[in-house]
Image (cartoon, rainbow, N blue to C red):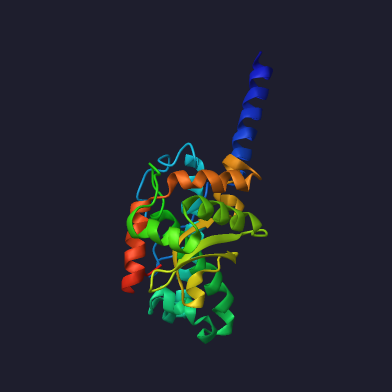
Length: 243
């Protein structure tokens, strides 16, 4: 019995020695976003507020990871090129050719993405509904009425190859037009303003709709906040609409 106990003691001592020599595993925390002049506003509604048309998980991942990545990248650019934050976003995007070539594409992609998503979160909300007042009149006048407009908008969004956006642009006279842009390009790059826009990157809808982009585009009308769209329309006519 004594020899068995001694063997156990030797084994236990050896085990402790090995454990002491093993490297300690430390779980790393995610790095904090870089500080800087660009900020992402929180959603003006709960992540699950747009269900069943857009699922809560998408509304967590989309702003907190995808949009936040654009903001993080912009703040990294701004460390060495502070001029990108010293002018209004529409002016920077309309004058991309004036930026240093080394950051031009990065600013185009990330500032465009920041502007597009900032608009996107604003024009959505629970409840849905239909346009009224000046917006409804403009849709009738310029886009052939609500049904035709929604069908044409959905068709245009469906034709975007790969990733991009479908927009309704608005000028100072209040005239509306449908156009599409690839990637994170924005009408702001052409000196225009977007009244509304829908994100047709797969990350905007894939968890719920998979490859059924047409179903997503149709369901999206249930979460358009037409009161906010009316505010944007008035601001566009007044020349005060930013992004």
